[in-house]
Length: 324
Image (cartoon, rainbow, N blue to C red; front, side, top):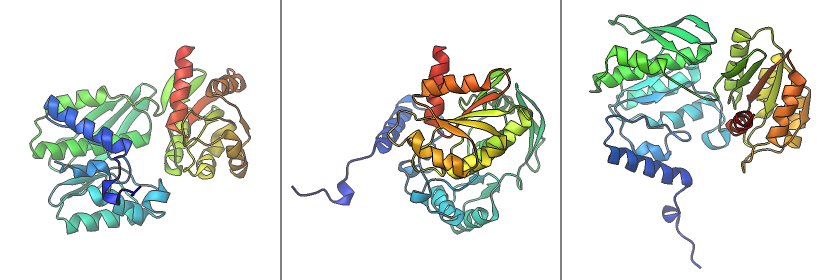
């Protein structure tokens, strides 16, 4: 049988769901849609869109087998969403990434807004109930945003989202400041430093690379500095597990390694030497339900239980907790 040429391959699951999403939005006659890239940007299925504004969040090393193993390579792939003449908003970036974004934006004559430079933000206060962030663009009155999401990185994310909305307004989206503030106040993001229980603490997170693991450790230090941590951990086969665990190691008392029901999930026995390499004590426990029970047993009333490393594992942990 003759094989199909490359341009006649079958569409991927992501490409099919992207097409279905576009069809649904069109049928619903939406005023505005937020379209998130699946992987990278330049070659992503979502990149057929000509946006009112493109948004690039903080760039770090992830999916290196596909996107490249340097920030320069990854930034080039991410910047593929920048369209000629269309504005783009960027989170604060390392110099290596920023050089690429600035060059491509200039080449395409795309107005570039950089959070931290063109829009400033300050975290005013925070608690387990959320935080208040002041954002300010030149020529505008500062605006206070109350967000339920925890961690300094979420203050940055809020500033990026606010900047994108401000640019979108200039592009024709009708929004009042009060509506923007209401939207931020109602934001929910399950599995992102989600405090299920505060005493003893039980936290669900989805940090899945070294950068996000570092942000997770900072947030643990910010909100639960005195609590030892029992980590429920699983990861996909393409992740740098040793680096993630090394970032979290200063806060970890013990790791319970487990595996979600997902085709790319690593067996916990393969994670054990990586945990040893990172210098953390670990044990392998499956299924996830047994891992949750073991972590709660180890923690008792004196330690914090944390799920991280894979959104698939955290989703499974959430399902176990819901049953309980």
